[in-house]
Length: 178
Image (tube, helix red, strand yellow):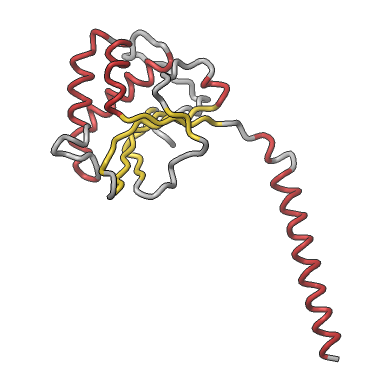
């Protein structure tokens, strides 16, 4: 009798696992999964964007340089935690200028951002204890929107998002992520 009960238990377990896998495939792999937009991710060290931004906005060149120096990890203030408040205005200015340059906008003071846009540009910090701290610009943009943007060649295209990597922090985003 125990042998029969054990065989029923094992058979039921195997059938349950198979049905569970099939149901999961049907729900996640069916029509529900096909509606997701393809997203491109780009990253570039903040220091390498200076010449590109100055070229895009020559009249703001000095302000761009000042903001980059303030945020740079070579500065005595590495922008993490509470110290980031000290450079928040510089970060907001740089991200707005960069976002405008990516869109090809000449004047960023009245930058119009579509409420339907899923593009975000973030200022990030990689605090790798072995390689040191590095500040990056991180762009997340739907593939269809990326075609209309002027993304420089220096920006490294990533295979997957970096948001969950160890030592990786998002300090600020433009437009703000909700």
